[in-house]
Image 1 (cartoon, one colour):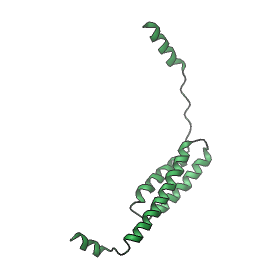
Image 2 (image 1 turned 135 degrees about the vertical axis):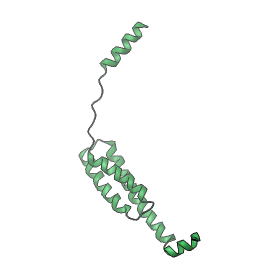
Image 3 (image 1 turned 30 degrees about the horizontal axis):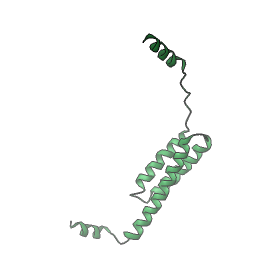
Image 4 (image 1 turned 180 degrees about the vertical axis):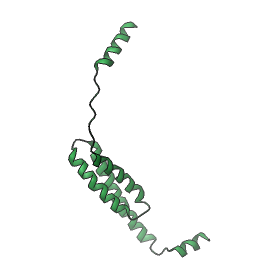
Length: 110
């Protein structure tokens, strides 16, 4: 029992922790704005602007830190947010082009 305890303690004390990599702030902002553009793309048409800004920030962050997978995830989220917002705006224009506030009130029987 003492032998196991000795080896487990020496193993824990001799193993150094890996050094944390610095992440670009642009990448984190791009990822956050990309996720926000995916969520807001369902409801508003202005998410295209947010997704464009997110893609711009993601590209800058990815260029500064080429080895980071967070940069790739940031670019993917930004692109998905842009595509989702464009598709949802097309769906709104196709199916809901004639809806006004009065027709909505009549539909809801208010």
